Length: 273
Image (cartoon, rainbow, N blue to C red; front, side, top):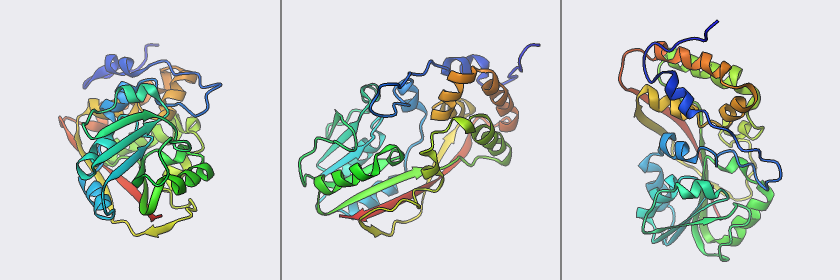
């Protein structure tokens, strides 16, 4: 029997373009879940609110140097650049850095969060957006103590599932929990709790409530879902079949709107060093 057809919207051909072979990570020193498809990651991942970066800069004086760990496509590093004299974006994936956003104040380097190569006490603000859950926490906190100047700041944040409409949310929840659920790395649990359960050995600051917002079409949503690390692992193990079934449900759930409002809860924790 033929598989389900997508009657409208970007269609199955778009879904096929999103399905890429996933790297075999054996022998790597870190979980490289995002190098393959780095261009899609840069294109489809949502943006953080400007208010977040203003608040961070306002809590660091002077705002000379910021460093973004797990910078990926450089989204955070480039957003910090207007607030700091210099920004360093670090990521262990050279493929991700090849797709990073250029900015005259941003320097990109291939390095891990646990061994940044930054000078002692050289950073006023150290951040990690949607990346901290991949770090070796003990080694990372040691690196924070080494590179952040006394009185400087550490901020880590992550975002949860989208909210669009009840119909679309239901399809995404099914994809998240039932279809790709077994393929999430155990670190995903830290994101689901917005890092609240992590014991951080620094004095915590009270961060405001932030929310991520966007106006997306159906194609943008589908591209975003395909950047999930569990989506990629499911694709590698099970092929396109289970994912086809979910993507076939999205157009009907989406409806006729060319764009819809999309929101994500953003959990931010910040600390004085």
